Image (cartoon, rainbow, N blue to C red; front, side, top):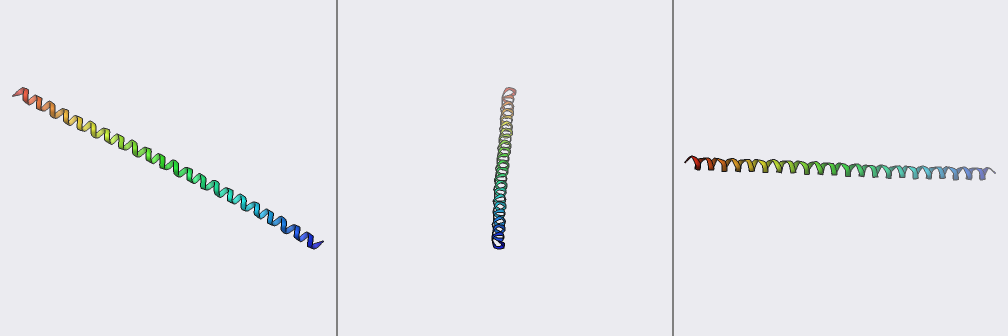
Length: 83
């Protein structure tokens, strides 16, 4: 009887240990997935911000070039009209 009781206790302990390991592995997988999702979201946000900044800088440069060209043309026309 004592031997049977000890075997039953050992089986229960092993079963509990295996369940705990499975839960820990599940939690680690969930944590890894959450970390990957957070990294992907951060990368997407950074890429969007960089693209928006590049678009704004390009627009500012284009507007500046257009203003310089218009001012130059107007000045040239004014000089020709005055002369």
